[in-house]
Length: 157
Image (cartoon, rainbow, N blue to C red; front, side, top):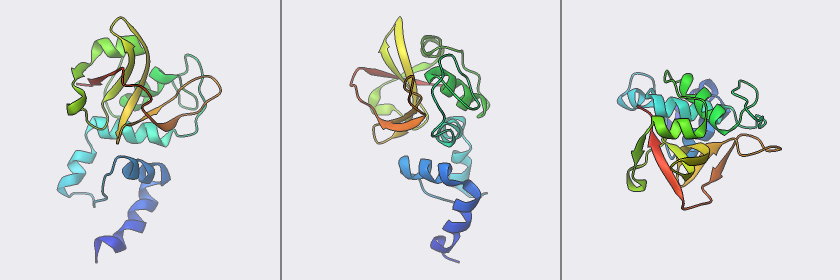
């Protein structure tokens, strides 16, 4: 059976949000048990998938899910479901992660807006200059292009 013939079954099992995440991050689809599957289980990749699965959930100030989120609530929720604990606020998450140079950023790294001591927003890097985030009151969780060059990247250990 060719890889092409396996795709529909995998997409059906993975769900639309996971398929969108795969497309957004430029990933491929593999069968369980193959070498790329081990990478797919990495916490950062899992967190990225969880965040994408919440597409369309409304912003809620101080909300940590499962039905609404603020920015750091989404990242906390996504990493918790990937087996990693994060502090509650964007600033605390910034303080708890390892800085990563932009050239070394990877899918699933956190993207922080602001500057050290005044981080005001966070999202999860999805590749191609985009993040999954919960932006503001009246908005929903979505995939969006990073709109500023004044960002810093953090890796969850």
